Length: 165
Image (tube, rainbow, N blue to C red; front, side):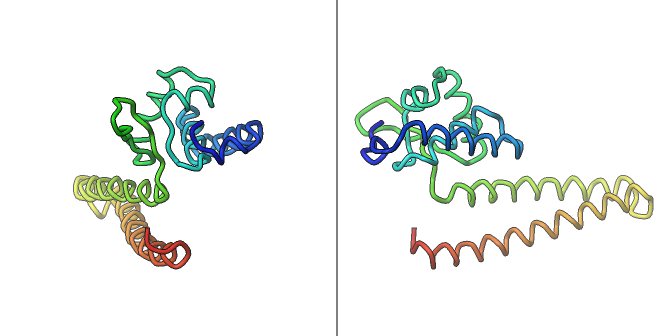
């Protein structure tokens, strides 16, 4: 690894953490390889690693790294960046990755709300299915509002804890 602080760490302890945290992510619904890759990036001091570094640490093929990065990028949990003066890519996890991932979920919730509104109209608001659809819509509208308010509170809290960033 390129990070000096990482070389001073016990590689076995780091590996145990990566696998343990990845197992928690898998239990929550994430695919196994993206979970392992995310945990490896999160546990690196720089927050960025090359495909070769990730493959070496996780003992996986370049194709496995590529697939996991593709998934994590779609979820807005990692980004790709070019090394200056090189064609080689590095993959980075940002300090606000959870914020980005949740913000992305807000867009999904908005799409669900639109579909549910159509469902209420299509099924009829006075039918049992229409009422169930309306309750589901109300739930997602509530969640959407709560997420927006919570994210604002998080921005303020994060700034208090860690400063501008």
